[in-house]
Every structure is written in C-alpha cells, then in structure tokens.
Image (cartoon, rainbow, N blue to C red; front, side, top):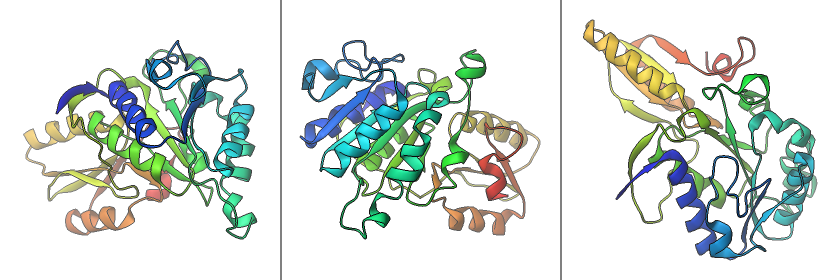
Length: 275
C-alpha cells in the first residue's frame, strides 16, 4: 500500500494500464512532457514514448473523433478533455458516434476500448468555464458508461476497470479533491466493478447518497447528524450510468428516507433521476 492523493492514483492507474496493454495510448492537450494542466499524465511520455503519449491540437471535437477512430481499429485510447466544460465541442462525436458505434454496425465493429477522462466540478475558483458539472447530459445516452470516483482508492480501481470495459466510458474526475483526497492505495493492479454503488457507512434512520467531491460533504453531514442521534447510511454511487438502483432501493427500504447531495445545476442534475 502507498499513500496517494486522487491525482496520483489516476496517474498510477494510467501507468499500469499502459504497461499491461501495448495498444493503450494517451492523448490530449498538453498531456505529454507538460503532464496536462493538473499533471495527471506526468512522466508517462518519458516512460512510454511520444507515439503512445502525445499532445493534440486544441480541438476537443478532433480529440474525440481521433479517439473513436483509434478504438475502432483496435487501440485502447485514453483521451483527456482538459476541463469538462470544454467537452461540448466533442458532444456529437461522443453521443452520436462513440455511443452508437456497435449498434450502427450490427456489432461488427465497436469502440469499446475508448475512455474519456476529464476534470469536472467547482472548488478551484474557476468561474464560468472551469467549474461545470455536465455529467447528466451524457447519462441520457445509451451506449455510454459514466463513472465518478470520490477517493484515491476508488479512482485507481474504477479507472482501470473503465479502460478495460468493453464499452466507451466517460470518467469524470472531481478536480476540487485532486490533491485534497488522500488515502491508502494498493500498488498492484486491481479493478473495482462499474455500476456498483458502495455503502460507505451503515445506518437506520436516513440514507445519504452522493458521488465525487460531494462525498466529503455528505460524510461531514452524517457525522453532524450522528452527534444529534440520527443514524445515517451513506452511499457513494460511483457509477451514474448505469446506476445501481438495487443498492439504493435496498437502503431506502431500510431507512424510509433518502437525501441526495449532488454538485450540479439546479435543474436537470442527475440527482433528479434518482429521486
């Protein structure tokens, strides 16, 4: 075990994935020698070379389109969108090409080896173009998986599972806790199952559900409630598409109450789907 923050766990997962899979490539803006704006890909170009870890032009539509093409011919592309706020130029490529590739070809072709990584959410004083939470847009789209980690341990295991999943996956990384979330992480290769929520804490009076950076807020709220004699069950959803309705329903059957904390717009956030 090693102590890592969430950013280091992501970097470690990428290194393992590229070591184990010679077809894996990382692409995105400034991800090479610079390591990306948050340094998530630091040192990977030195280890794997410029043909496998390379910078792209500043064009999200191009990044997504090129990644779809790579996946279609058998590569394992891991594409970084520098901020989730700038994923919208790539929206058509993701929801109309990547998500539908297997269906439109009658399962003759697929882009199942495709992963998009992107930092999302607030917490860094980023203003209107570097603070958005656009995950709910993509949860409307059959053919995609949408994953959000909240701890370094989960970030590594979920990212490795996402890269190896036979479907295109969007991996939203909560940038507010990139360095703030620190924990023990196994050094070896491991995966955590997608589409499976985690009961972080058991309780009887109310179910608290969150994901990403909101997990820290929710655990603090649970601690305050426990001091007042309220027994809280805390669930980390981890995967939004497909979401683990069975785990949530079983918890609510027990407690009779559900509170959802999500970092999203007032209207149309994914919490509304769960409610």
